[in-house]
Image (tube, rainbow, N blue to C red):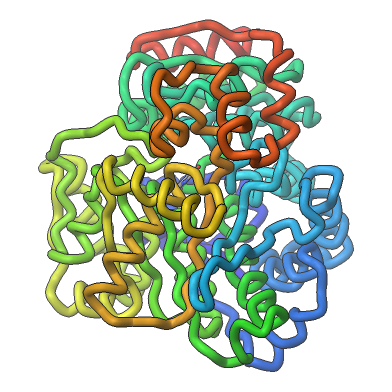
Length: 496
Ligand SMILES: *Cc1c(COP(=O)(O)O)cnc(C)c1O
Protein backbone atom coordinates (compact mmCIF):
# COMPACT_ATOMS: atom_id res chain seq x y z
CA UNK A 1 0.00 0.00 0.00
CA UNK A 2 1.38 3.38 -1.00
CA UNK A 3 0.35 6.90 -0.03
CA UNK A 4 -0.18 10.03 -2.08
CA UNK A 5 -0.80 13.71 -1.39
CA UNK A 6 -4.29 15.23 -1.55
CA UNK A 7 -2.90 18.14 -3.60
CA UNK A 8 -1.74 16.38 -6.68
CA UNK A 9 1.95 15.69 -6.06
CA UNK A 10 2.61 12.51 -8.09
CA UNK A 11 5.24 11.12 -5.72
CA UNK A 12 4.06 7.99 -3.88
CA UNK A 13 5.55 6.89 -0.59
CA UNK A 14 5.31 4.10 1.98
CA UNK A 15 3.35 4.35 5.22
CA UNK A 16 6.59 4.65 7.20
CA UNK A 17 7.60 7.66 5.10
CA UNK A 18 4.14 9.21 5.43
CA UNK A 19 4.26 8.80 9.21
CA UNK A 20 7.68 10.46 9.43
CA UNK A 21 6.79 13.35 7.11
CA UNK A 22 3.33 14.15 8.47
CA UNK A 23 2.51 16.71 5.79
CA UNK A 24 3.34 16.42 2.09
CA UNK A 25 5.76 18.98 0.67
CA UNK A 26 2.98 20.40 -1.55
CA UNK A 27 1.03 21.21 1.61
CA UNK A 28 -1.37 18.29 1.13
CA UNK A 29 -2.18 15.38 3.45
CA UNK A 30 -1.18 11.78 2.80
CA UNK A 31 -3.93 9.35 1.91
CA UNK A 32 -3.86 5.67 0.94
CA UNK A 33 -3.98 4.99 -2.80
CA UNK A 34 -6.86 2.55 -2.34
CA UNK A 35 -9.03 1.23 0.46
CA UNK A 36 -8.98 -2.44 1.42
CA UNK A 37 -12.52 -3.86 1.47
CA UNK A 38 -13.69 -6.35 4.10
CA UNK A 39 -16.39 -8.90 3.34
CA UNK A 40 -19.00 -9.50 6.02
CA UNK A 41 -17.23 -12.77 6.80
CA UNK A 42 -13.97 -10.99 7.39
CA UNK A 43 -15.73 -8.59 9.75
CA UNK A 44 -17.32 -11.54 11.54
CA UNK A 45 -13.88 -13.03 12.11
CA UNK A 46 -13.07 -10.03 14.29
CA UNK A 47 -16.02 -10.62 16.62
CA UNK A 48 -14.29 -13.04 18.98
CA UNK A 49 -10.99 -11.18 19.04
CA UNK A 50 -9.76 -8.79 21.74
CA UNK A 51 -9.25 -5.15 20.80
CA UNK A 52 -5.53 -5.46 20.12
CA UNK A 53 -6.08 -8.27 17.60
CA UNK A 54 -8.84 -6.33 15.87
CA UNK A 55 -6.35 -3.47 15.63
CA UNK A 56 -3.68 -5.78 14.25
CA UNK A 57 -6.01 -6.99 11.51
CA UNK A 58 -7.33 -3.59 10.43
CA UNK A 59 -4.04 -1.69 10.65
CA UNK A 60 -2.16 -4.48 8.91
CA UNK A 61 -4.09 -3.71 5.71
CA UNK A 62 -2.69 -0.20 5.60
CA UNK A 63 0.76 -0.50 7.14
CA UNK A 64 2.01 -3.07 4.67
CA UNK A 65 5.66 -2.06 5.10
CA UNK A 66 5.46 -3.21 8.73
CA UNK A 67 5.71 -6.92 9.52
CA UNK A 68 2.83 -8.57 11.28
CA UNK A 69 5.19 -9.40 14.17
CA UNK A 70 5.98 -5.71 14.57
CA UNK A 71 2.33 -4.69 14.52
CA UNK A 72 1.41 -7.49 16.92
CA UNK A 73 4.00 -6.20 19.38
CA UNK A 74 2.84 -2.59 19.09
CA UNK A 75 -0.88 -3.30 19.37
CA UNK A 76 -0.26 -5.40 22.50
CA UNK A 77 1.96 -2.69 23.99
CA UNK A 78 -0.62 0.02 23.27
CA UNK A 79 -3.96 -1.63 24.08
CA UNK A 80 -3.71 -3.42 27.40
CA UNK A 81 -5.05 -3.12 30.93
CA UNK A 82 -1.90 -1.43 32.13
CA UNK A 83 -2.72 1.60 29.94
CA UNK A 84 -6.52 1.24 29.95
CA UNK A 85 -8.81 0.91 32.94
CA UNK A 86 -11.30 -1.27 31.06
CA UNK A 87 -10.42 -4.70 29.66
CA UNK A 88 -12.55 -4.00 26.56
CA UNK A 89 -10.31 -0.96 25.83
CA UNK A 90 -13.21 0.74 23.98
CA UNK A 91 -16.37 -0.50 25.77
CA UNK A 92 -19.94 0.25 24.74
CA UNK A 93 -22.61 1.52 27.13
CA UNK A 94 -26.16 1.23 25.86
CA UNK A 95 -28.78 3.60 27.23
CA UNK A 96 -31.66 2.74 24.88
CA UNK A 97 -32.24 -0.14 22.48
CA UNK A 98 -30.88 1.96 19.63
CA UNK A 99 -28.62 4.45 21.44
CA UNK A 100 -25.14 3.36 22.45
CA UNK A 101 -22.09 5.22 23.70
CA UNK A 102 -18.66 4.09 22.55
CA UNK A 103 -16.36 5.07 25.41
CA UNK A 104 -12.98 6.00 23.98
CA UNK A 105 -11.68 7.61 27.15
CA UNK A 106 -10.37 4.71 29.22
CA UNK A 107 -6.73 5.38 28.34
CA UNK A 108 -4.03 7.21 30.30
CA UNK A 109 -5.21 10.77 29.49
CA UNK A 110 -8.98 10.16 29.61
CA UNK A 111 -9.70 11.32 26.06
CA UNK A 112 -10.06 9.46 22.76
CA UNK A 113 -6.74 10.81 21.48
CA UNK A 114 -5.09 7.98 23.44
CA UNK A 115 -6.57 5.46 21.00
CA UNK A 116 -4.06 6.70 18.41
CA UNK A 117 -1.34 8.28 20.50
CA UNK A 118 -0.67 5.20 22.60
CA UNK A 119 0.46 3.34 19.48
CA UNK A 120 1.81 6.13 17.29
CA UNK A 121 5.20 6.47 19.05
CA UNK A 122 5.89 2.80 18.24
CA UNK A 123 4.90 3.38 14.62
CA UNK A 124 7.04 6.49 14.36
CA UNK A 125 10.19 5.08 15.94
CA UNK A 126 9.89 1.93 13.79
CA UNK A 127 9.38 4.12 10.72
CA UNK A 128 12.55 6.04 11.51
CA UNK A 129 14.49 2.77 11.69
CA UNK A 130 12.96 1.52 8.44
CA UNK A 131 13.86 4.70 6.60
CA UNK A 132 17.30 4.81 8.14
CA UNK A 133 16.91 8.38 9.37
CA UNK A 134 19.84 9.50 11.47
CA UNK A 135 18.32 12.66 12.85
CA UNK A 136 16.38 13.01 16.03
CA UNK A 137 12.72 13.75 15.52
CA UNK A 138 11.08 16.76 17.10
CA UNK A 139 7.33 16.30 17.37
CA UNK A 140 5.49 19.59 17.05
CA UNK A 141 1.93 19.68 18.38
CA UNK A 142 -0.82 22.27 18.34
CA UNK A 143 -3.56 21.24 20.73
CA UNK A 144 -7.05 22.26 21.67
CA UNK A 145 -6.43 20.39 24.93
CA UNK A 146 -6.61 16.64 24.53
CA UNK A 147 -4.11 15.90 21.77
CA UNK A 148 -1.37 17.70 23.68
CA UNK A 149 -1.61 15.57 26.78
CA UNK A 150 -2.11 12.33 24.86
CA UNK A 151 0.94 13.07 22.67
CA UNK A 152 3.05 14.02 25.69
CA UNK A 153 2.09 10.81 27.44
CA UNK A 154 2.77 8.74 24.33
CA UNK A 155 6.15 10.27 23.52
CA UNK A 156 7.45 10.92 27.04
CA UNK A 157 11.04 9.58 27.20
CA UNK A 158 10.72 7.78 23.85
CA UNK A 159 14.29 7.46 22.53
CA UNK A 160 15.19 9.53 19.46
CA UNK A 161 12.30 11.95 19.95
CA UNK A 162 11.57 15.29 21.55
CA UNK A 163 8.13 16.79 21.80
CA UNK A 164 6.94 20.38 22.14
CA UNK A 165 3.25 21.14 22.68
CA UNK A 166 1.60 24.51 22.05
CA UNK A 167 -1.83 25.17 23.54
CA UNK A 168 -4.09 28.26 23.37
CA UNK A 169 -3.63 30.03 26.68
CA UNK A 170 -7.31 30.53 27.50
CA UNK A 171 -8.70 27.79 25.29
CA UNK A 172 -8.39 24.66 27.41
CA UNK A 173 -10.05 23.41 30.60
CA UNK A 174 -8.33 23.56 34.00
CA UNK A 175 -7.86 19.80 34.13
CA UNK A 176 -6.53 19.71 30.57
CA UNK A 177 -4.03 22.44 31.38
CA UNK A 178 -2.91 20.81 34.61
CA UNK A 179 -2.48 17.49 32.83
CA UNK A 180 -0.12 19.11 30.33
CA UNK A 181 1.93 21.43 32.52
CA UNK A 182 2.65 18.62 34.98
CA UNK A 183 3.89 16.18 32.29
CA UNK A 184 6.88 13.99 33.19
CA UNK A 185 9.74 13.19 30.84
CA UNK A 186 13.13 14.63 29.92
CA UNK A 187 12.26 15.17 26.25
CA UNK A 188 9.10 17.27 26.62
CA UNK A 189 8.17 20.97 26.56
CA UNK A 190 4.78 22.66 26.98
CA UNK A 191 4.09 26.27 25.94
CA UNK A 192 0.98 28.46 26.18
CA UNK A 193 0.25 30.68 23.16
CA UNK A 194 -1.71 33.93 23.39
CA UNK A 195 -4.47 33.24 20.88
CA UNK A 196 -7.05 30.61 20.04
CA UNK A 197 -6.59 27.09 18.68
CA UNK A 198 -6.69 28.20 15.05
CA UNK A 199 -3.84 30.66 15.73
CA UNK A 200 -1.87 27.88 17.37
CA UNK A 201 -2.53 25.40 14.56
CA UNK A 202 -1.72 28.01 11.90
CA UNK A 203 1.57 28.72 13.70
CA UNK A 204 2.53 25.06 13.74
CA UNK A 205 1.59 24.60 10.08
CA UNK A 206 3.70 27.65 9.18
CA UNK A 207 6.70 26.11 10.93
CA UNK A 208 6.19 22.87 9.00
CA UNK A 209 6.20 24.63 5.64
CA UNK A 210 9.17 26.91 6.47
CA UNK A 211 12.04 25.33 4.54
CA UNK A 212 14.63 27.78 5.87
CA UNK A 213 13.69 26.90 9.41
CA UNK A 214 13.83 23.18 8.54
CA UNK A 215 17.42 23.61 7.29
CA UNK A 216 18.35 25.36 10.49
CA UNK A 217 16.93 22.50 12.56
CA UNK A 218 18.68 19.98 10.33
CA UNK A 219 21.98 21.66 11.01
CA UNK A 220 21.52 21.09 14.74
CA UNK A 221 20.48 17.47 14.20
CA UNK A 222 16.68 17.54 14.15
CA UNK A 223 13.87 16.99 11.72
CA UNK A 224 10.27 17.87 12.45
CA UNK A 225 7.28 15.59 12.61
CA UNK A 226 3.67 15.96 13.61
CA UNK A 227 1.44 14.09 16.04
CA UNK A 228 -1.66 16.03 14.98
CA UNK A 229 -4.41 14.21 13.16
CA UNK A 230 -2.99 15.38 9.85
CA UNK A 231 -0.49 12.53 10.38
CA UNK A 232 -1.51 9.21 8.86
CA UNK A 233 -0.16 7.47 11.97
CA UNK A 234 -2.92 9.17 13.95
CA UNK A 235 -5.74 8.23 11.62
CA UNK A 236 -5.12 4.58 10.93
CA UNK A 237 -5.52 3.44 14.58
CA UNK A 238 -8.83 5.32 14.73
CA UNK A 239 -10.42 3.21 11.99
CA UNK A 240 -10.15 0.23 14.33
CA UNK A 241 -12.73 1.27 16.90
CA UNK A 242 -15.49 1.62 14.31
CA UNK A 243 -15.02 -2.06 13.47
CA UNK A 244 -14.63 -2.92 17.13
CA UNK A 245 -17.87 -1.16 18.09
CA UNK A 246 -19.72 -2.99 15.33
CA UNK A 247 -18.42 -6.34 16.59
CA UNK A 248 -19.38 -5.52 20.17
CA UNK A 249 -22.92 -4.56 19.14
CA UNK A 250 -23.22 -7.99 17.53
CA UNK A 251 -21.85 -9.59 20.68
CA UNK A 252 -24.47 -7.74 22.74
CA UNK A 253 -27.24 -8.87 20.38
CA UNK A 254 -28.05 -5.23 19.67
CA UNK A 255 -27.64 -5.86 15.94
CA UNK A 256 -27.25 -8.80 13.57
CA UNK A 257 -24.23 -9.12 11.26
CA UNK A 258 -24.91 -7.01 8.19
CA UNK A 259 -27.31 -4.59 9.91
CA UNK A 260 -26.61 -0.93 9.35
CA UNK A 261 -25.39 1.27 12.20
CA UNK A 262 -25.11 5.07 12.38
CA UNK A 263 -22.27 6.81 14.15
CA UNK A 264 -22.63 10.25 15.66
CA UNK A 265 -19.28 11.95 16.21
CA UNK A 266 -18.45 15.17 18.09
CA UNK A 267 -16.23 16.79 15.49
CA UNK A 268 -13.44 19.35 15.51
CA UNK A 269 -10.56 18.72 13.14
CA UNK A 270 -12.59 16.03 11.30
CA UNK A 271 -10.10 13.25 12.16
CA UNK A 272 -12.36 11.01 14.19
CA UNK A 273 -15.32 11.07 11.82
CA UNK A 274 -13.02 10.71 8.79
CA UNK A 275 -11.76 7.43 10.28
CA UNK A 276 -15.44 6.40 10.38
CA UNK A 277 -15.77 7.28 6.71
CA UNK A 278 -12.74 5.16 5.91
CA UNK A 279 -14.36 2.25 7.82
CA UNK A 280 -17.45 2.78 5.65
CA UNK A 281 -15.33 2.68 2.50
CA UNK A 282 -13.84 -0.57 3.78
CA UNK A 283 -17.26 -2.18 3.83
CA UNK A 284 -18.41 -1.67 7.42
CA UNK A 285 -22.24 -1.45 7.25
CA UNK A 286 -22.66 2.20 8.20
CA UNK A 287 -25.91 4.02 7.42
CA UNK A 288 -25.08 7.61 8.29
CA UNK A 289 -22.13 9.40 9.82
CA UNK A 290 -23.59 12.26 11.80
CA UNK A 291 -21.17 15.14 12.15
CA UNK A 292 -21.89 17.06 15.36
CA UNK A 293 -20.58 20.60 15.87
CA UNK A 294 -20.75 23.01 18.77
CA UNK A 295 -21.46 26.72 18.24
CA UNK A 296 -18.45 26.84 15.90
CA UNK A 297 -20.65 25.01 13.40
CA UNK A 298 -18.63 25.64 10.25
CA UNK A 299 -18.83 21.93 9.32
CA UNK A 300 -22.61 21.74 9.75
CA UNK A 301 -22.93 24.76 7.47
CA UNK A 302 -20.61 23.17 4.95
CA UNK A 303 -22.50 19.88 4.83
CA UNK A 304 -25.81 21.74 4.47
CA UNK A 305 -24.77 24.36 1.93
CA UNK A 306 -21.57 23.22 0.21
CA UNK A 307 -19.89 26.46 1.32
CA UNK A 308 -16.95 26.28 3.68
CA UNK A 309 -16.53 29.72 5.21
CA UNK A 310 -14.08 30.34 8.02
CA UNK A 311 -14.79 34.11 8.09
CA UNK A 312 -17.06 33.95 11.09
CA UNK A 313 -16.87 34.68 14.78
CA UNK A 314 -14.84 32.21 16.77
CA UNK A 315 -16.54 31.12 20.00
CA UNK A 316 -14.85 29.71 23.06
CA UNK A 317 -17.23 27.02 24.33
CA UNK A 318 -17.54 24.39 27.05
CA UNK A 319 -16.43 21.80 24.47
CA UNK A 320 -13.00 23.37 23.71
CA UNK A 321 -11.64 20.42 21.72
CA UNK A 322 -14.22 21.25 19.06
CA UNK A 323 -13.52 24.99 18.95
CA UNK A 324 -12.06 24.93 15.46
CA UNK A 325 -12.84 26.86 12.30
CA UNK A 326 -10.32 25.19 9.98
CA UNK A 327 -10.93 21.44 10.04
CA UNK A 328 -7.77 20.08 8.47
CA UNK A 329 -8.94 16.55 7.73
CA UNK A 330 -11.92 17.65 5.67
CA UNK A 331 -9.37 17.95 2.87
CA UNK A 332 -9.01 14.17 2.89
CA UNK A 333 -12.76 13.70 2.52
CA UNK A 334 -12.94 16.19 -0.35
CA UNK A 335 -10.15 14.31 -2.07
CA UNK A 336 -12.21 11.11 -2.08
CA UNK A 337 -15.40 12.97 -3.01
CA UNK A 338 -13.68 14.58 -6.02
CA UNK A 339 -12.47 11.17 -7.25
CA UNK A 340 -8.95 11.97 -6.09
CA UNK A 341 -8.62 15.23 -8.01
CA UNK A 342 -5.58 16.86 -6.40
CA UNK A 343 -5.82 19.99 -8.59
CA UNK A 344 -9.32 20.79 -7.38
CA UNK A 345 -8.35 20.24 -3.75
CA UNK A 346 -5.36 22.50 -4.23
CA UNK A 347 -7.65 25.21 -5.59
CA UNK A 348 -10.09 24.92 -2.67
CA UNK A 349 -7.31 25.09 -0.10
CA UNK A 350 -5.76 28.12 -1.80
CA UNK A 351 -9.14 29.85 -1.79
CA UNK A 352 -9.56 29.02 1.88
CA UNK A 353 -6.15 30.49 2.68
CA UNK A 354 -6.59 33.61 0.51
CA UNK A 355 -10.32 34.41 0.62
CA UNK A 356 -11.34 32.47 3.71
CA UNK A 357 -13.89 30.33 1.90
CA UNK A 358 -14.57 27.89 -0.94
CA UNK A 359 -17.66 26.34 -2.48
CA UNK A 360 -17.96 22.79 -3.76
CA UNK A 361 -20.25 21.93 -6.68
CA UNK A 362 -23.77 20.66 -6.09
CA UNK A 363 -22.85 17.14 -7.24
CA UNK A 364 -20.14 16.87 -4.61
CA UNK A 365 -22.39 18.26 -1.92
CA UNK A 366 -24.99 15.61 -2.73
CA UNK A 367 -22.40 12.89 -2.69
CA UNK A 368 -21.31 14.01 0.77
CA UNK A 369 -24.91 14.05 1.99
CA UNK A 370 -25.46 10.46 0.89
CA UNK A 371 -23.34 9.33 3.81
CA UNK A 372 -22.99 12.38 6.10
CA UNK A 373 -25.64 14.11 8.13
CA UNK A 374 -24.96 16.99 10.47
CA UNK A 375 -26.21 18.68 13.57
CA UNK A 376 -25.07 21.28 16.06
CA UNK A 377 -25.59 22.02 19.71
CA UNK A 378 -25.21 25.41 21.36
CA UNK A 379 -24.17 25.77 24.99
CA UNK A 380 -27.57 25.65 26.68
CA UNK A 381 -28.68 22.55 24.77
CA UNK A 382 -25.35 20.86 25.43
CA UNK A 383 -25.79 21.41 29.16
CA UNK A 384 -29.38 20.18 29.01
CA UNK A 385 -28.18 17.02 27.27
CA UNK A 386 -25.76 16.28 30.11
CA UNK A 387 -28.53 16.72 32.67
CA UNK A 388 -31.11 14.74 30.69
CA UNK A 389 -28.83 11.77 30.12
CA UNK A 390 -27.79 11.74 33.76
CA UNK A 391 -31.35 12.07 35.09
CA UNK A 392 -32.86 9.55 32.72
CA UNK A 393 -30.09 6.96 32.46
CA UNK A 394 -27.84 7.66 35.44
CA UNK A 395 -25.03 7.97 32.90
CA UNK A 396 -22.59 10.87 32.95
CA UNK A 397 -21.25 12.30 29.68
CA UNK A 398 -18.73 15.05 29.00
CA UNK A 399 -19.38 18.32 27.19
CA UNK A 400 -18.22 17.01 23.78
CA UNK A 401 -20.19 13.78 23.91
CA UNK A 402 -23.19 15.90 24.94
CA UNK A 403 -22.91 17.94 21.75
CA UNK A 404 -23.18 14.69 19.81
CA UNK A 405 -26.09 13.44 21.92
CA UNK A 406 -28.05 16.61 21.30
CA UNK A 407 -27.20 16.67 17.59
CA UNK A 408 -28.47 13.09 17.35
CA UNK A 409 -31.82 14.01 18.95
CA UNK A 410 -32.25 16.81 16.42
CA UNK A 411 -31.26 14.53 13.55
CA UNK A 412 -33.75 11.87 14.66
CA UNK A 413 -36.56 14.41 14.94
CA UNK A 414 -35.95 15.69 11.44
CA UNK A 415 -35.20 12.40 9.70
CA UNK A 416 -37.22 9.79 11.62
CA UNK A 417 -34.15 7.60 11.16
CA UNK A 418 -34.25 5.09 14.04
CA UNK A 419 -31.19 3.09 12.92
CA UNK A 420 -29.16 1.89 15.93
CA UNK A 421 -26.68 4.67 16.58
CA UNK A 422 -23.33 4.75 18.29
CA UNK A 423 -22.46 8.09 19.86
CA UNK A 424 -18.71 8.35 20.03
CA UNK A 425 -17.91 9.38 23.63
CA UNK A 426 -14.64 11.24 23.30
CA UNK A 427 -13.67 12.28 26.83
CA UNK A 428 -14.26 11.52 30.48
CA UNK A 429 -16.60 14.05 32.10
CA UNK A 430 -13.86 14.59 34.69
CA UNK A 431 -11.81 16.52 32.14
CA UNK A 432 -14.48 19.23 32.14
CA UNK A 433 -15.68 19.17 35.75
CA UNK A 434 -16.79 22.79 36.09
CA UNK A 435 -19.00 22.76 32.99
CA UNK A 436 -20.45 19.35 33.82
CA UNK A 437 -21.28 20.46 37.37
CA UNK A 438 -23.00 23.59 36.07
CA UNK A 439 -24.93 21.49 33.58
CA UNK A 440 -26.16 19.33 36.46
CA UNK A 441 -27.53 22.48 38.08
CA UNK A 442 -24.88 23.03 40.74
CA UNK A 443 -24.34 26.60 41.90
CA UNK A 444 -21.05 28.11 43.13
CA UNK A 445 -18.87 25.55 41.41
CA UNK A 446 -15.19 25.56 42.45
CA UNK A 447 -12.54 25.45 39.76
CA UNK A 448 -9.53 23.25 39.05
CA UNK A 449 -8.79 20.33 41.34
CA UNK A 450 -11.61 21.04 43.80
CA UNK A 451 -14.22 20.56 41.09
CA UNK A 452 -13.07 16.96 40.64
CA UNK A 453 -14.15 16.03 44.16
CA UNK A 454 -17.34 18.03 43.81
CA UNK A 455 -18.33 16.18 40.65
CA UNK A 456 -17.65 12.89 42.37
CA UNK A 457 -19.76 13.90 45.36
CA UNK A 458 -22.68 14.98 43.20
CA UNK A 459 -22.70 11.98 40.83
CA UNK A 460 -20.95 9.10 42.59
CA UNK A 461 -19.16 8.35 39.29
CA UNK A 462 -15.63 6.96 39.74
CA UNK A 463 -12.80 9.40 39.04
CA UNK A 464 -10.32 7.97 36.48
CA UNK A 465 -6.98 7.30 38.17
CA UNK A 466 -4.89 9.64 35.98
CA UNK A 467 -7.21 12.50 36.92
CA UNK A 468 -7.22 11.54 40.59
CA UNK A 469 -3.42 11.71 40.49
CA UNK A 470 -3.48 15.35 39.35
CA UNK A 471 -4.19 16.31 42.94
CA UNK A 472 -0.51 15.67 43.73
CA UNK A 473 0.88 16.88 40.43
CA UNK A 474 4.03 19.00 40.15
CA UNK A 475 3.81 22.00 37.82
CA UNK A 476 6.80 21.87 35.49
CA UNK A 477 5.93 24.30 32.68
CA UNK A 478 4.65 27.88 32.84
CA UNK A 479 5.99 29.53 29.69
CA UNK A 480 3.58 31.76 27.76
CA UNK A 481 4.42 33.36 24.39
CA UNK A 482 2.93 35.45 21.57
CA UNK A 483 1.85 33.63 18.45
CA UNK A 484 4.78 34.94 16.39
CA UNK A 485 7.29 33.55 18.88
CA UNK A 486 6.63 29.88 18.23
CA UNK A 487 9.75 29.35 16.04
CA UNK A 488 11.92 30.81 18.74
CA UNK A 489 10.36 28.56 21.36
CA UNK A 490 11.17 25.50 19.25
CA UNK A 491 14.78 26.61 18.78
CA UNK A 492 15.22 27.33 22.46
CA UNK A 493 13.84 23.93 23.39
CA UNK A 494 16.17 22.14 20.97
CA UNK A 495 19.14 24.17 22.11
CA UNK A 496 19.73 25.84 18.71
C1 LIG B 1 -10.18 16.08 19.68
C2 LIG B 1 -11.51 15.94 20.30
C3 LIG B 1 -12.69 16.04 19.53
C4 LIG B 1 -12.66 16.34 18.05
O1 LIG B 1 -12.09 15.28 17.32
P1 LIG B 1 -11.59 15.54 15.82
O2 LIG B 1 -10.91 14.29 15.43
O3 LIG B 1 -10.65 16.70 15.90
O4 LIG B 1 -12.78 15.85 15.00
C5 LIG B 1 -13.90 15.84 20.15
N1 LIG B 1 -13.96 15.59 21.48
C6 LIG B 1 -12.87 15.51 22.25
C7 LIG B 1 -13.03 15.27 23.71
C8 LIG B 1 -11.61 15.67 21.69
O5 LIG B 1 -10.52 15.59 22.46
